[in-house]
Image (cartoon, rainbow over all chains, first blue to last red; front, side, top):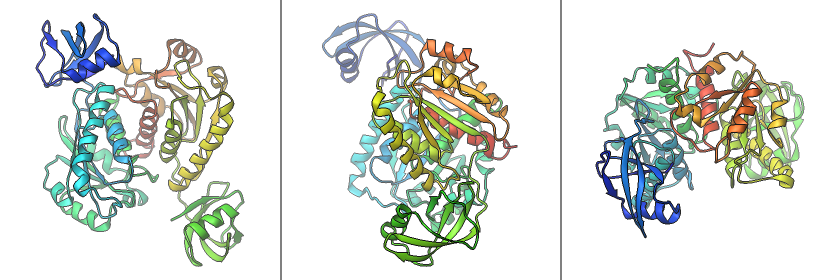
Length: 250
Length: 250
Protein backbone atom coordinates (compact mmCIF):
# COMPACT_ATOMS: atom_id res chain seq x y z
CA UNK A 1 0.00 0.00 0.00
CA UNK A 2 1.38 3.43 -0.90
CA UNK A 3 2.66 5.47 2.01
CA UNK A 4 3.13 9.26 1.93
CA UNK A 5 4.24 11.88 4.44
CA UNK A 6 2.14 15.03 4.88
CA UNK A 7 2.90 18.37 6.49
CA UNK A 8 -0.66 18.82 7.70
CA UNK A 9 -2.37 17.39 10.78
CA UNK A 10 -4.89 14.62 10.04
CA UNK A 11 -8.15 13.54 11.65
CA UNK A 12 -10.45 10.62 10.94
CA UNK A 13 -13.40 11.64 8.81
CA UNK A 14 -11.69 14.69 7.31
CA UNK A 15 -11.31 15.27 3.63
CA UNK A 16 -7.93 16.53 2.37
CA UNK A 17 -6.63 17.78 -0.94
CA UNK A 18 -3.25 16.17 -1.41
CA UNK A 19 -0.14 18.20 -2.32
CA UNK A 20 0.30 18.16 -6.09
CA UNK A 21 3.41 15.94 -6.08
CA UNK A 22 1.58 13.23 -4.15
CA UNK A 23 -1.54 13.79 -6.26
CA UNK A 24 0.53 13.39 -9.41
CA UNK A 25 2.13 10.18 -8.13
CA UNK A 26 -1.18 8.64 -7.10
CA UNK A 27 -3.21 9.88 -10.01
CA UNK A 28 -0.85 9.79 -12.96
CA UNK A 29 2.00 7.42 -12.04
CA UNK A 30 0.02 4.78 -10.18
CA UNK A 31 -3.30 5.49 -11.94
CA UNK A 32 -5.19 5.19 -8.68
CA UNK A 33 -8.96 5.11 -8.78
CA UNK A 34 -11.66 6.46 -6.50
CA UNK A 35 -11.95 4.06 -3.58
CA UNK A 36 -8.29 2.99 -3.57
CA UNK A 37 -6.70 2.84 -0.12
CA UNK A 38 -3.29 4.19 0.85
CA UNK A 39 -1.48 5.49 3.94
CA UNK A 40 -0.75 9.04 5.04
CA UNK A 41 1.63 10.00 7.84
CA UNK A 42 0.86 13.11 9.85
CA UNK A 43 3.56 15.39 11.32
CA UNK A 44 2.98 13.73 14.71
CA UNK A 45 4.14 10.44 13.04
CA UNK A 46 0.73 8.84 13.30
CA UNK A 47 -0.20 6.76 10.25
CA UNK A 48 -3.75 6.99 8.89
CA UNK A 49 -5.43 4.86 6.31
CA UNK A 50 -6.91 7.05 3.58
CA UNK A 51 -9.14 6.53 0.57
CA UNK A 52 -9.11 8.35 -2.77
CA UNK A 53 -12.40 10.28 -2.98
CA UNK A 54 -11.88 12.36 -6.14
CA UNK A 55 -9.39 12.61 -9.01
CA UNK A 56 -8.99 15.63 -11.31
CA UNK A 57 -5.63 15.75 -13.11
CA UNK A 58 -3.00 16.21 -10.40
CA UNK A 59 -5.64 17.24 -7.87
CA UNK A 60 -6.46 14.25 -5.73
CA UNK A 61 -8.83 14.41 -2.77
CA UNK A 62 -8.80 11.79 -0.07
CA UNK A 63 -10.95 10.84 2.90
CA UNK A 64 -9.02 10.20 6.11
CA UNK A 65 -10.07 6.88 7.64
CA UNK A 66 -8.84 5.37 10.90
CA UNK A 67 -5.30 5.49 12.32
CA UNK A 68 -3.43 2.27 11.57
CA UNK A 69 -1.68 2.30 14.97
CA UNK A 70 1.44 1.09 13.26
CA UNK A 71 4.76 2.16 14.76
CA UNK A 72 7.72 0.66 12.96
CA UNK A 73 10.37 2.90 14.46
CA UNK A 74 13.32 1.64 16.49
CA UNK A 75 12.88 2.23 20.25
CA UNK A 76 16.10 4.28 20.25
CA UNK A 77 17.05 7.29 18.14
CA UNK A 78 20.02 6.35 15.95
CA UNK A 79 22.40 8.72 14.17
CA UNK A 80 24.91 7.33 11.69
CA UNK A 81 28.00 9.43 10.96
CA UNK A 82 29.56 8.42 7.67
CA UNK A 83 33.01 9.59 6.55
CA UNK A 84 32.68 10.88 2.97
CA UNK A 85 32.99 7.97 0.56
CA UNK A 86 33.25 7.59 -3.20
CA UNK A 87 30.71 7.41 -5.98
CA UNK A 88 27.11 6.68 -5.10
CA UNK A 89 27.88 4.98 -1.78
CA UNK A 90 26.28 7.89 0.16
CA UNK A 91 22.99 7.35 -1.68
CA UNK A 92 23.17 3.64 -1.03
CA UNK A 93 23.91 4.25 2.65
CA UNK A 94 20.97 6.66 3.03
CA UNK A 95 18.57 4.30 1.25
CA UNK A 96 19.53 1.16 3.16
CA UNK A 97 19.96 2.91 6.51
CA UNK A 98 16.44 4.30 6.10
CA UNK A 99 15.06 0.80 5.46
CA UNK A 100 16.85 -0.27 8.63
CA UNK A 101 15.41 2.45 10.87
CA UNK A 102 18.01 5.23 11.09
CA UNK A 103 16.75 8.59 12.41
CA UNK A 104 19.55 10.89 11.25
CA UNK A 105 22.55 10.59 8.95
CA UNK A 106 25.56 12.88 9.06
CA UNK A 107 28.09 12.98 6.24
CA UNK A 108 31.45 14.37 7.27
CA UNK A 109 34.90 14.58 5.71
CA UNK A 110 37.39 12.50 7.68
CA UNK A 111 41.17 12.15 7.52
CA UNK A 112 41.15 9.21 5.09
CA UNK A 113 38.26 10.48 2.92
CA UNK A 114 39.37 10.39 -0.70
CA UNK A 115 36.53 12.67 -1.79
CA UNK A 116 35.64 16.19 -0.73
CA UNK A 117 32.27 17.83 -1.14
CA UNK A 118 33.00 21.48 -0.31
CA UNK A 119 30.66 23.66 -2.38
CA UNK A 120 28.88 20.57 -3.72
CA UNK A 121 27.74 19.63 -0.22
CA UNK A 122 24.44 21.52 -0.24
CA UNK A 123 23.33 19.99 -3.53
CA UNK A 124 24.39 16.49 -2.50
CA UNK A 125 22.63 16.79 0.85
CA UNK A 126 19.43 17.97 -0.87
CA UNK A 127 19.57 14.92 -3.14
CA UNK A 128 20.26 12.61 -0.19
CA UNK A 129 17.25 13.96 1.68
CA UNK A 130 15.14 13.05 -1.37
CA UNK A 131 16.59 9.54 -1.25
CA UNK A 132 15.66 9.35 2.45
CA UNK A 133 12.08 10.44 1.73
CA UNK A 134 11.66 7.91 -1.04
CA UNK A 135 13.09 5.10 1.09
CA UNK A 136 10.97 6.13 4.08
CA UNK A 137 7.87 5.92 1.87
CA UNK A 138 8.83 2.46 0.65
CA UNK A 139 9.72 1.14 4.12
CA UNK A 140 6.53 2.59 5.57
CA UNK A 141 8.44 4.54 8.21
CA UNK A 142 6.64 6.81 10.70
CA UNK A 143 9.32 9.46 10.24
CA UNK A 144 11.55 10.61 7.40
CA UNK A 145 15.21 10.42 8.41
CA UNK A 146 17.14 13.67 8.00
CA UNK A 147 20.52 13.95 6.30
CA UNK A 148 23.04 16.68 7.10
CA UNK A 149 26.64 17.65 6.36
CA UNK A 150 29.11 18.57 9.09
CA UNK A 151 32.45 19.98 8.05
CA UNK A 152 34.50 18.05 10.58
CA UNK A 153 34.91 16.18 13.83
CA UNK A 154 34.87 19.38 15.87
CA UNK A 155 31.26 20.09 14.86
CA UNK A 156 30.29 16.49 15.64
CA UNK A 157 31.81 16.47 19.11
CA UNK A 158 29.72 19.48 20.05
CA UNK A 159 26.49 17.51 19.57
CA UNK A 160 24.86 15.71 22.45
CA UNK A 161 23.97 12.00 22.49
CA UNK A 162 23.25 9.52 25.29
CA UNK A 163 25.52 6.88 23.80
CA UNK A 164 28.49 7.54 21.51
CA UNK A 165 30.29 4.85 19.54
CA UNK A 166 32.92 4.64 16.85
CA UNK A 167 33.16 1.48 14.74
CA UNK A 168 36.85 0.71 14.90
CA UNK A 169 38.38 -2.07 12.83
CA UNK A 170 41.41 -2.26 15.11
CA UNK A 171 39.14 -2.99 18.08
CA UNK A 172 37.53 -5.83 16.17
CA UNK A 173 40.95 -7.22 15.26
CA UNK A 174 41.87 -7.16 18.93
CA UNK A 175 38.77 -9.20 19.69
CA UNK A 176 36.63 -6.40 21.13
CA UNK A 177 33.11 -7.76 20.99
CA UNK A 178 31.30 -6.51 24.05
CA UNK A 179 31.05 -2.75 23.73
CA UNK A 180 28.36 -2.60 21.05
CA UNK A 181 25.97 -4.83 23.00
CA UNK A 182 26.72 -3.11 26.30
CA UNK A 183 26.24 0.36 24.84
CA UNK A 184 22.91 -0.49 23.22
CA UNK A 185 21.61 -2.24 26.33
CA UNK A 186 22.55 0.81 28.44
CA UNK A 187 20.60 3.20 26.21
CA UNK A 188 17.14 3.85 27.59
CA UNK A 189 14.07 3.60 25.39
CA UNK A 190 13.85 6.88 23.51
CA UNK A 191 17.54 7.58 24.10
CA UNK A 192 19.95 8.65 21.40
CA UNK A 193 22.85 6.67 19.96
CA UNK A 194 25.45 7.99 17.52
CA UNK A 195 27.96 5.77 15.72
CA UNK A 196 30.87 6.97 13.57
CA UNK A 197 31.96 4.99 10.52
CA UNK A 198 35.18 5.81 8.68
CA UNK A 199 35.54 6.25 4.91
CA UNK A 200 37.20 3.61 2.72
CA UNK A 201 40.55 4.10 4.45
CA UNK A 202 39.10 3.72 7.93
CA UNK A 203 39.27 6.00 10.95
CA UNK A 204 42.69 7.55 11.64
CA UNK A 205 44.46 7.19 14.97
CA UNK A 206 44.23 10.92 15.70
CA UNK A 207 40.48 10.83 15.02
CA UNK A 208 40.18 7.90 17.41
CA UNK A 209 42.02 9.84 20.13
CA UNK A 210 39.84 12.91 19.52
CA UNK A 211 36.62 10.86 19.65
CA UNK A 212 37.74 8.99 22.79
CA UNK A 213 38.52 12.32 24.45
CA UNK A 214 34.91 13.32 23.76
CA UNK A 215 33.39 10.21 25.30
CA UNK A 216 33.10 7.96 22.24
CA UNK A 217 33.48 4.25 22.92
CA UNK A 218 35.42 2.07 20.49
CA UNK A 219 33.32 -0.87 19.31
CA UNK A 220 34.11 -3.89 17.19
CA UNK A 221 31.39 -5.07 14.78
CA UNK A 222 32.37 -8.71 14.61
CA UNK A 223 35.61 -10.18 13.21
CA UNK A 224 35.14 -9.51 9.50
CA UNK A 225 36.26 -6.38 7.66
CA UNK A 226 33.22 -4.59 6.20
CA UNK A 227 33.16 -1.88 3.56
CA UNK A 228 32.36 1.68 4.58
CA UNK A 229 28.81 1.28 3.21
CA UNK A 230 28.16 -2.10 4.86
CA UNK A 231 29.25 -1.43 8.44
CA UNK A 232 26.42 1.05 9.24
CA UNK A 233 23.89 -1.53 8.03
CA UNK A 234 25.36 -4.18 10.35
CA UNK A 235 25.12 -1.66 13.18
CA UNK A 236 21.49 -0.74 12.52
CA UNK A 237 20.55 -4.42 12.18
CA UNK A 238 22.31 -5.11 15.47
CA UNK A 239 20.27 -2.39 17.20
CA UNK A 240 17.07 -3.91 15.82
CA UNK A 241 18.02 -7.40 16.99
CA UNK A 242 18.98 -6.14 20.45
CA UNK A 243 15.95 -3.89 20.99
CA UNK A 244 13.10 -5.32 18.90
CA UNK A 245 13.38 -9.09 18.65
CA UNK A 246 11.98 -11.16 21.49
CA UNK A 247 14.24 -12.46 24.22
CA UNK A 248 16.13 -9.17 24.15
CA UNK A 249 13.59 -6.43 23.86
CA UNK A 250 12.50 -4.82 27.09
CA UNK B 1 47.26 -6.40 3.99
CA UNK B 2 46.46 -8.24 0.75
CA UNK B 3 44.70 -11.58 1.17
CA UNK B 4 44.61 -14.30 -1.48
CA UNK B 5 43.19 -17.81 -1.66
CA UNK B 6 45.39 -20.63 -2.93
CA UNK B 7 44.57 -24.12 -4.14
CA UNK B 8 47.78 -25.59 -2.75
CA UNK B 9 48.59 -26.68 0.79
CA UNK B 10 50.97 -24.35 2.66
CA UNK B 11 53.65 -24.91 5.30
CA UNK B 12 55.79 -22.46 7.25
CA UNK B 13 59.24 -22.13 5.75
CA UNK B 14 58.19 -23.24 2.26
CA UNK B 15 58.74 -21.22 -0.86
CA UNK B 16 55.88 -21.02 -3.37
CA UNK B 17 55.50 -19.65 -6.87
CA UNK B 18 52.19 -17.84 -6.93
CA UNK B 19 49.55 -18.47 -9.64
CA UNK B 20 50.01 -15.91 -12.42
CA UNK B 21 46.80 -14.00 -11.67
CA UNK B 22 47.91 -13.39 -8.09
CA UNK B 23 51.47 -12.71 -9.24
CA UNK B 24 50.15 -10.14 -11.71
CA UNK B 25 48.02 -8.45 -9.05
CA UNK B 26 50.84 -8.27 -6.53
CA UNK B 27 53.61 -7.49 -8.96
CA UNK B 28 51.99 -5.26 -11.57
CA UNK B 29 48.82 -3.82 -10.02
CA UNK B 30 50.06 -3.26 -6.48
CA UNK B 31 53.76 -2.93 -7.45
CA UNK B 32 54.78 -5.02 -4.47
CA UNK B 33 58.45 -5.24 -3.60
CA UNK B 34 60.65 -8.00 -2.24
CA UNK B 35 60.05 -8.16 1.49
CA UNK B 36 56.41 -7.03 1.35
CA UNK B 37 54.04 -9.03 3.55
CA UNK B 38 50.64 -10.38 2.56
CA UNK B 39 48.28 -13.20 3.52
CA UNK B 40 47.65 -16.52 1.80
CA UNK B 41 44.77 -18.86 2.63
CA UNK B 42 45.32 -22.59 2.18
CA UNK B 43 42.55 -25.00 1.09
CA UNK B 44 42.18 -26.06 4.75
CA UNK B 45 41.17 -22.40 5.45
CA UNK B 46 44.26 -21.67 7.51
CA UNK B 47 45.68 -18.20 6.89
CA UNK B 48 49.46 -17.79 6.60
CA UNK B 49 51.51 -14.65 6.54
CA UNK B 50 53.76 -14.63 3.50
CA UNK B 51 56.58 -12.46 2.20
CA UNK B 52 57.49 -11.63 -1.40
CA UNK B 53 60.88 -13.24 -2.06
CA UNK B 54 61.31 -12.68 -5.81
CA UNK B 55 59.60 -10.74 -8.62
CA UNK B 56 60.01 -11.45 -12.34
CA UNK B 57 57.18 -10.04 -14.48
CA UNK B 58 54.05 -11.94 -13.46
CA UNK B 59 56.11 -14.60 -11.72
CA UNK B 60 56.13 -13.85 -8.01
CA UNK B 61 57.73 -16.12 -5.46
CA UNK B 62 56.84 -15.94 -1.80
CA UNK B 63 58.16 -17.39 1.44
CA UNK B 64 55.48 -18.84 3.73
CA UNK B 65 55.84 -17.46 7.24
CA UNK B 66 53.77 -18.37 10.27
CA UNK B 67 50.02 -19.07 10.40
CA UNK B 68 48.09 -16.00 11.55
CA UNK B 69 45.63 -18.12 13.56
CA UNK B 70 42.88 -15.79 12.40
CA UNK B 71 39.43 -17.26 12.01
CA UNK B 72 36.83 -14.71 11.01
CA UNK B 73 34.12 -17.15 10.01
CA UNK B 74 30.68 -17.27 11.61
CA UNK B 75 30.29 -20.21 14.00
CA UNK B 76 27.34 -21.46 11.93
CA UNK B 77 27.19 -22.25 8.22
CA UNK B 78 24.72 -19.84 6.58
CA UNK B 79 23.05 -20.23 3.18
CA UNK B 80 21.06 -17.33 1.73
CA UNK B 81 18.42 -18.15 -0.89
CA UNK B 82 17.58 -15.08 -2.95
CA UNK B 83 14.62 -14.92 -5.31
CA UNK B 84 15.88 -13.57 -8.66
CA UNK B 85 15.88 -9.78 -8.56
CA UNK B 86 16.46 -7.01 -11.07
CA UNK B 87 19.56 -5.28 -12.37
CA UNK B 88 22.77 -5.63 -10.40
CA UNK B 89 21.09 -6.46 -7.10
CA UNK B 90 22.45 -10.04 -7.22
CA UNK B 91 26.02 -8.70 -7.41
CA UNK B 92 25.35 -6.36 -4.46
CA UNK B 93 23.85 -9.21 -2.48
CA UNK B 94 26.83 -11.50 -3.12
CA UNK B 95 29.37 -8.79 -2.29
CA UNK B 96 27.69 -7.59 0.90
CA UNK B 97 26.67 -11.06 2.07
CA UNK B 98 30.29 -12.14 1.69
CA UNK B 99 31.47 -9.24 3.85
CA UNK B 100 28.90 -10.35 6.40
CA UNK B 101 30.03 -13.99 6.55
CA UNK B 102 27.70 -15.98 4.29
CA UNK B 103 28.90 -19.47 3.32
CA UNK B 104 26.67 -20.20 0.33
CA UNK B 105 24.28 -18.20 -1.82
CA UNK B 106 21.54 -19.71 -3.95
CA UNK B 107 19.76 -17.69 -6.63
CA UNK B 108 16.39 -19.11 -7.56
CA UNK B 109 13.43 -17.93 -9.64
CA UNK B 110 10.37 -17.45 -7.44
CA UNK B 111 6.73 -16.75 -8.22
CA UNK B 112 7.05 -12.97 -8.02
CA UNK B 113 10.46 -12.74 -9.73
CA UNK B 114 10.20 -10.19 -12.52
CA UNK B 115 13.41 -11.43 -14.15
CA UNK B 116 14.33 -14.85 -15.48
CA UNK B 117 17.85 -16.12 -16.08
CA UNK B 118 17.27 -19.34 -18.04
CA UNK B 119 20.21 -19.83 -20.42
CA UNK B 120 21.97 -16.79 -18.94
CA UNK B 121 22.17 -18.47 -15.54
CA UNK B 122 25.54 -20.18 -16.04
CA UNK B 123 27.24 -16.98 -17.13
CA UNK B 124 25.67 -14.94 -14.33
CA UNK B 125 26.62 -17.51 -11.72
CA UNK B 126 30.23 -17.56 -12.97
CA UNK B 127 30.35 -13.78 -12.64
CA UNK B 128 28.78 -13.90 -9.17
CA UNK B 129 31.39 -16.42 -8.01
CA UNK B 130 34.06 -13.91 -9.11
CA UNK B 131 32.32 -11.23 -7.05
CA UNK B 132 32.35 -13.61 -4.07
CA UNK B 133 36.08 -14.28 -4.47
CA UNK B 134 36.92 -10.60 -4.69
CA UNK B 135 34.78 -9.75 -1.65
CA UNK B 136 36.23 -12.69 0.30
CA UNK B 137 39.73 -11.35 -0.42
CA UNK B 138 38.77 -7.87 0.75
CA UNK B 139 36.98 -9.08 3.91
CA UNK B 140 39.88 -11.41 4.75
CA UNK B 141 37.60 -14.43 4.90
CA UNK B 142 38.94 -17.92 5.61
CA UNK B 143 36.69 -19.36 2.91
CA UNK B 144 35.31 -18.17 -0.39
CA UNK B 145 31.49 -18.37 -0.39
CA UNK B 146 30.00 -20.36 -3.26
CA UNK B 147 27.15 -19.14 -5.45
CA UNK B 148 24.77 -21.48 -7.26
CA UNK B 149 21.54 -21.40 -9.25
CA UNK B 150 18.60 -23.66 -8.48
CA UNK B 151 15.74 -23.74 -10.94
CA UNK B 152 13.00 -23.77 -8.33
CA UNK B 153 11.67 -24.48 -4.86
CA UNK B 154 11.53 -28.23 -5.50
CA UNK B 155 15.31 -28.41 -5.85
CA UNK B 156 15.76 -26.31 -2.72
CA UNK B 157 13.49 -28.43 -0.55
CA UNK B 158 15.56 -31.51 -1.37
CA UNK B 159 18.62 -29.99 0.33
CA UNK B 160 19.37 -30.69 3.96
CA UNK B 161 19.89 -28.00 6.62
CA UNK B 162 19.72 -28.05 10.43
CA UNK B 163 17.63 -24.88 10.55
CA UNK B 164 15.35 -23.63 7.79
CA UNK B 165 13.82 -20.15 7.74
CA UNK B 166 11.90 -18.00 5.34
CA UNK B 167 11.86 -14.23 5.84
CA UNK B 168 8.17 -13.42 5.61
CA UNK B 169 6.92 -9.84 5.58
CA UNK B 170 3.45 -10.93 6.65
CA UNK B 171 4.89 -12.55 9.77
CA UNK B 172 6.64 -9.31 10.64
CA UNK B 173 3.43 -7.37 10.10
CA UNK B 174 1.68 -9.74 12.49
CA UNK B 175 4.34 -8.99 15.09
CA UNK B 176 6.31 -12.25 14.79
CA UNK B 177 9.62 -11.42 16.39
CA UNK B 178 10.79 -14.54 18.19
CA UNK B 179 11.44 -17.18 15.56
CA UNK B 180 14.67 -15.76 14.16
CA UNK B 181 16.34 -15.59 17.57
CA UNK B 182 15.00 -18.98 18.64
CA UNK B 183 16.12 -20.66 15.43
CA UNK B 184 19.64 -19.24 15.60
CA UNK B 185 20.01 -20.10 19.28
CA UNK B 186 18.90 -23.68 18.58
CA UNK B 187 21.50 -24.17 15.86
CA UNK B 188 24.60 -25.88 17.23
CA UNK B 189 28.06 -24.51 16.52
CA UNK B 190 29.00 -25.74 13.06
CA UNK B 191 25.36 -26.33 12.19
CA UNK B 192 23.73 -25.16 8.97
CA UNK B 193 21.08 -22.46 8.58
CA UNK B 194 19.25 -21.61 5.36
CA UNK B 195 17.04 -18.54 4.93
CA UNK B 196 14.83 -17.78 1.94
CA UNK B 197 14.30 -14.17 0.79
CA UNK B 198 11.69 -13.31 -1.81
CA UNK B 199 12.26 -11.12 -4.88
CA UNK B 200 10.91 -7.56 -5.12
CA UNK B 201 7.31 -8.76 -4.96
CA UNK B 202 7.89 -10.89 -1.88
CA UNK B 203 7.22 -14.58 -1.26
CA UNK B 204 3.90 -15.89 -2.56
CA UNK B 205 1.36 -17.67 -0.37
CA UNK B 206 1.75 -20.95 -2.25
CA UNK B 207 5.54 -20.77 -1.80
CA UNK B 208 5.00 -20.16 1.92
CA UNK B 209 2.78 -23.22 2.16
CA UNK B 210 5.30 -25.33 0.22
CA UNK B 211 8.19 -24.17 2.41
CA UNK B 212 6.23 -24.74 5.62
CA UNK B 213 5.37 -28.25 4.45
CA UNK B 214 9.12 -28.85 4.14
CA UNK B 215 9.96 -27.67 7.63
CA UNK B 216 10.76 -24.01 6.99
CA UNK B 217 9.89 -21.65 9.84
CA UNK B 218 8.40 -18.24 9.06
CA UNK B 219 10.44 -15.47 10.62
CA UNK B 220 9.89 -11.73 10.90
CA UNK B 221 12.98 -9.52 10.59
CA UNK B 222 11.74 -6.59 12.63
CA UNK B 223 8.79 -4.29 11.84
CA UNK B 224 10.18 -2.40 8.83
CA UNK B 225 9.80 -3.44 5.18
CA UNK B 226 13.23 -4.08 3.68
CA UNK B 227 14.16 -4.38 0.03
CA UNK B 228 15.03 -7.76 -1.42
CA UNK B 229 18.73 -6.87 -1.30
CA UNK B 230 18.67 -5.50 2.26
CA UNK B 231 16.85 -8.26 4.14
CA UNK B 232 19.61 -10.89 3.74
CA UNK B 233 22.13 -8.39 5.14
CA UNK B 234 19.92 -7.80 8.21
CA UNK B 235 19.72 -11.56 8.65
CA UNK B 236 23.48 -12.14 8.43
CA UNK B 237 24.14 -9.24 10.81
CA UNK B 238 21.61 -10.74 13.21
CA UNK B 239 23.42 -14.08 13.14
CA UNK B 240 26.71 -12.34 13.89
CA UNK B 241 25.21 -10.41 16.81
CA UNK B 242 23.59 -13.54 18.23
CA UNK B 243 26.58 -15.85 17.85
CA UNK B 244 29.70 -13.67 17.95
CA UNK B 245 29.17 -10.65 20.19
CA UNK B 246 29.70 -11.11 23.91
CA UNK B 247 26.75 -11.74 26.18
CA UNK B 248 25.23 -13.96 23.52
CA UNK B 249 28.01 -16.03 22.11
CA UNK B 250 28.46 -19.50 23.60
